[in-house]
Length: 360
Image 1 (cartoon, rainbow, N blue to C red):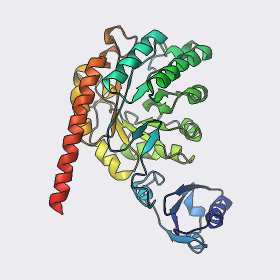
Image 2: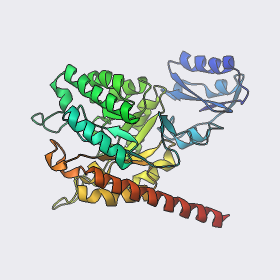
Image 3: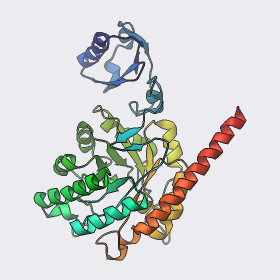
Image 4: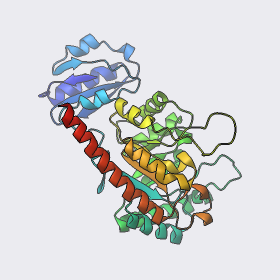
């Protein structure tokens, strides 16, 4: 990363950017309160770093060893004056701030009446962001692919239901895009674009989502390592969009015999990722367990280990849901999860504060 002097002029920053572009690379310019940092996107072997270091306005040229340079903690901390560079403000909600954020709603939108009822219930339960599936990537082509699979007109209508409910309840909305065509439609209505685990490796889709400028909720693939996960999130950041919300949602179970959960929720990944990047990390206990009777326990554990929020599937009558009946909880259960997790967050925060004071 190229660190500019605190008083660097605009023309000096532009000069550095032009030098980078001459090599066929791109420059990611991040302006902090007191300092500007420029990251290089592309093959850095083409760059003469000694030449860049000698340019007017440049204070330092510092290598970042991690392959995910633009989202690295080192890159974020270099932005002097930005104490919380990973905070993402979406309307009245701050993700990555001082309090956990709860995203809730049905796995799949079935009708306007169904969605409105659930939306009002999750708001009442204490959720901050409203989720709902319009496009549903499924393992089998013979399974229902969501209301969005019934044509573009129906997809837009369902998204308009989400938009209306979000505006009425003053809740940002998030829904998944599964390809370039659905991305165009989703970007017209949603406040946050979700890229699901099955598309974690879809570089073109990640970059296209980054170019929308909207926050991107990015889920880890169920077979991906942490370095892979962070490296692919860099495709979003490479388009000048660092409003990325990382989500841990479970890995494929290992070992022989019966699987007691749908996935194995990797909670150790939460603090591990937080040591590597400044981006907020959320947990999805619905997919991570596949069992509604485990969601409260794993939600509590996720908040205790430092997750900055949860993404939970909620349905007024889970037994009647078209998809994912086993992992959706009721609004009353969601209220219990949120209240309990808020208490845990407060207790853990107080404990850490006391430990820090004792160390001093």
